[in-house]
Image 1 (cartoon, rainbow, N blue to C red):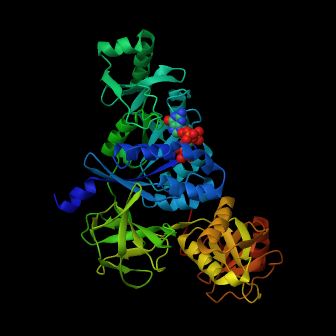
Image 2: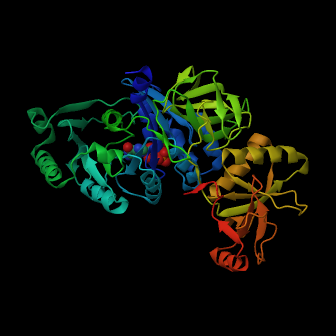
Image 3: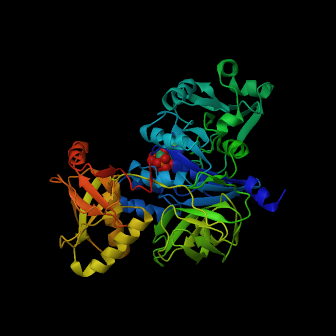
Length: 536
Ligand code: G4P
């Protein structure tokens, strides 16, 4: 086998999706713990505050060294190179999460055992499903009272419409659990409370179902209960089928507790065994690029400015799709139409950034970006000049007019707005010939406006004046005969503005207004996203 193929087969790149509070941060920390990337799982105590204030939210990121906004963490485990794409749980940042999922080969869906499928879980699941991503389910918080596991299984099947195959099964009655039984290995893992709040790798007792020691430890009632459950699952449940897992129609299901580390390591091991290695990637022309193609290719899925406040740098994250990345190599940047040198390539191991010497398909590298890259951009070997599939765009629903409070800070303000728009944190529109010095900002979630205010002040020293606008619908305007759009009739309660690429967009109150306007402009079409972007 070629070295490239060997490297590909040992790589796993996945995202964890969940409703806020299900335990995603905790699980991520614990996976890093098992991977040896951190010795003590991060300061769990600091967490409470991140739910309240945006400022805390940014500060917390620094304190804990693990990014709350989506970034990537890497560790090695048992010969595997694991890339976890971290995603923010709050729904106001779902745009970021959706883009991150573009870079994943599979997803781990985390569910709170007491709550089951929550709204955000459902939304994110659908994105994975539409992309045919294999989804692995981890039912968390098994250390405390939870719902009946059969109910949870049924909920997955009825609410999400996919079959579940429990790889392990909780041992216990009425939501009080003592351990799990692994249906694939026949081994039992019993939970041992160590009182350390999960800061150490957990000790557990393992044994066969037939082992007399296990019967003794469980007692007859629990033992019987478990045997009945397993019999029921074997008889009435779905059979394990890796092909169905790979096409996203069957989810392997695991039970455990991230906080106490219970079931985390056995989950990690099975997940690495069953989850797919880096997969072929879809191109704009409908073809695929195979990871083992020797020529390098990658796409940009995230840009983050000021990750290191001391340097005020801008890092562009790209997923490698084929070939080998060598430090200092030059590649063709399709959107910029030229060769670029990927400067200061970095990878992220927990708190540390390391300079990358070499990277392979599935790996995520961050490169220093002088402001030339955009989300969804394609980079590849000069011979390939590939273009990857379009990145999905969210139509903004909340709009505000913003300007700097102090007009002397206008330069910083414009810089900040431009950079945050390039990052994809906000969409920016301008009205022409109004004499106004303001921008219009469009976002999907209210919290994005708070983050905008916070970041402009903290990263660009520009205080904002912000007025929310009464619009909730944006439509990109195209002329059916390809003439420039100069006028939109009937736009009495809306405005005509221009996006960053100078494309005309109308901002209006509601869908009803859109019907009114469409009727008055038969020569124009109104699209939810620009014509070169895919809609979520
Ligand atoms: P998120 O990133 O998905 O939003 O969730 P996060 O890990 O922040 O966890 C949310 C809360 O759930 C935290 O409690 C965390 O400790 C708790 N949690 C995570 N995993 C488990 C688990 O396996 N069992 C139990 N019982 N709790 C779990 P918190 O009260 O918000 O914070 P803290 O005071 O515990 O730090």
